[in-house]
Length: 268
Image 1: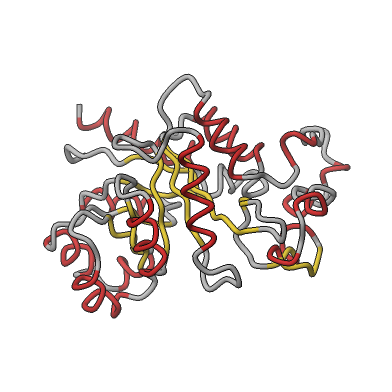
Image 2 (image 1 turned 90 degrees about the horizontal axis):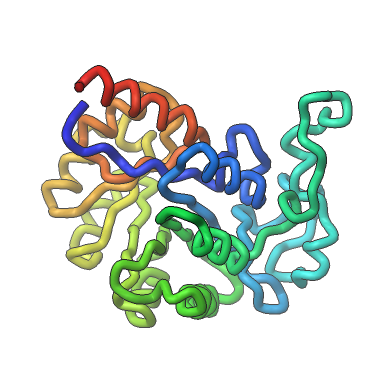
């Protein structure tokens, strides 16, 4: 294995085995040894940032409600974990439901959990766009980072987005917070490379890196670190190691950490 061991970041928590974005999924990731946690944030109707990927709750909480039209107290009544294992009642091994671990998770709770943890854990926070609240999402996010003192140099938090405008907002509000420009399509790189900040990190998807073998090298040659999503297989990890990727975002943090340990042992 090369000299750079990438940071292992749990995508929506340890979401391969647990309901994504629940505190249970993040605790499982921490227990597995994940060095970073990734989350998506959306703003509720009453102004709270919650860790949810989709704009509505059909997939994860059996509700047609949009996050932006729903208050936090209403979200708190919903079941965010049963969709992952609908047969849990028949499974003797399934953990008992726990309201603290399985309900909707606010960003504030996640940040405070990480801040209280007994080792440094980094948090990669993705803002979703377009959204009816526009730049309010980034303003609220920076407020939350200030609340835990993570808007300063050396912050364990970084902000990610597919929206260049959103990252510009964060740069103005909290210039010391690292930024990750996410890329869904390789064809966008030629334009983005002229727009993004010199020290911004670039976050391409593993699918694009696999299908466009020159993309990763083009990004690193332009002087940007790579953080790659979503890396779930050994072949995908090997490609990231070959490219000198600094962080791999994975649904399976325990598995990827084991793979890296095995490669370290072989190299040693």
